[in-house]
Image 1 (cartoon, each protein chain N blue to C red):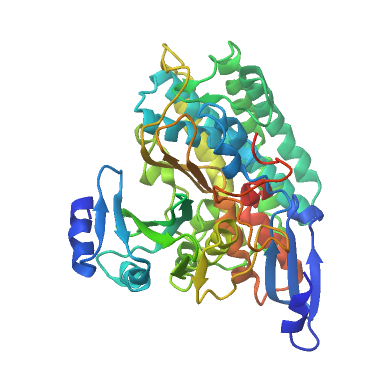
Image 2: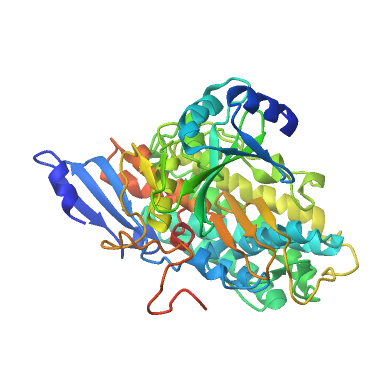
Length: 152
Length: 371
C-alpha cells in the first residue's frame, strides 16, 4: 500500500488519528488509549499485516514524552510510524509485547531510560542499568550526570 | 541478581554464564535456570559495556557523532559509519559522488567478509575446534591491511563522512583487493573441509536452536539470524541504498531455521560479497570522493531514519533534529539487541551444551547490544 492508501485505511480504523506531512513514511499521531486496539488491527488486518516492529523508542520533548513505533510489513513491504504523546509526570501506555515479541526488550529499555510505565508488561524490570537506578532516567533531558561521564 | 531463585521450582539449578566468559565474546551475563541439563530459562543481564552512546551523541555535532558509532558494532564499523552518514545526507539532501558510492560499497562488503571470518573462527573455537580460528584470521588480516592503508585504522575505521569518504583510496587498493580475492578463492574450500562437512560439527549444529520464520519476524530478528529461517529481510535488496540496486547478487536464504542454517547463510553470504567486489573493483569511477558540504552541518527540523544491512542484520539510525548543529535525539536500532532477545525462546528445552552453538550462530557482539 502507498502512504495515501494507508492514510485512508488508518482513518477508517481510527477516525481520531492525525497525520504528519513531509516524512518518508506515513506518520500517525494517536492517543495512548487508542494504541492497543490499533496495534492489534495493524498486526492482524490482512491488507495491513504489519508483522515487523523494527524500532521502538521514546523522545523527551521537555513538556511531554513521545513514544515512536516504526512498523513494517514483511509481506507488503510498506512502513508506518505511529506516535503517541505521553504525560511527562506519569507516562503510561499499554504494552504490545504480546503482539510483537521484540517489544518486550525494547519496552524494558524505554522503561529504564525514560521512565515510561508499560501497562500489563510481563516483566518490566531494569535491563541495562544496574540495580538501584529506578527513578533516574538517563535519556531524559533533565538527567543530571554527577560524574560527567556521558556529556563530552 | 539472585531473586530469581525464589521463582523456580525445587531441584532447579541457577548458573551464571559471564559476564567474563570466553563463549560470550564480551561482557554478556546470562542467568540460566536449569533442570538437570535442560534449559528452562535464559535471562540476559546487559549493561556491562553500556556507554550511553545515544546520550553522548546529543552533545556531539553531525560530523563528530559518526566516530562514536564505530564503537558500537566494532566488527562492522564501516557499515555503522555508513548508516549515520546516509542519515545525515538524507537531512542535508546532499548527492554523494559516484566514486564515493562505489568506495563505500566496496568497504562495506570487505567489512562484511572480515566480520563473517571472525565469526566463523570464533564460533568454531566455541565448539572446541581451535584451528579454524587461525585460518579465519589469516584471511581477515589481509582485509585489515587493506583497510589500514586506506583508512589508517584496522578496526574503528571512521572513514565515511557526510558527503562521501574521508580521503581517496590508497594507490595499492585495487592491487591488494585483487590479491586478497585470489587468496580467498584458493582457501575457501578449506572452510568446508575443516568445519562445514565435519560430522561432529554437523551433529552439534543441526536441529539445534530452531527458530520459525514467524517467530523470527515477531522477535525482530534480522540479518543471517532471520534469513536462516527463510525470512527475506536483506535491506540491500528490499530498500536498496547507494548502488546496491544496480549490482548483481543474491539474497541468501536457508529454510532450516536451526543453527546450521544460520551458519550456512553466513558462509554463502561471504561468496556473495566477493561477487559484489568483483563487479566493482575494476569499475571505480573517477571523480570526487566527497561532495562539497559546509564546515558546520545543520540538519533541518524533522526526523530522519535510515536502514542499512550490517554483517549482523538491520541497523537503523533515527535522528530527530530541531534545526541545530547537534541531534536532539538519536536512536540506534541495533541488530544485536533484537537478535539477543530471541535467545531465551530458542534455548528453552535444549541442553546446556547446545547454548554455545545457538549464541555462536546469532553472532552477538556485545557493544552493539549495549550501545
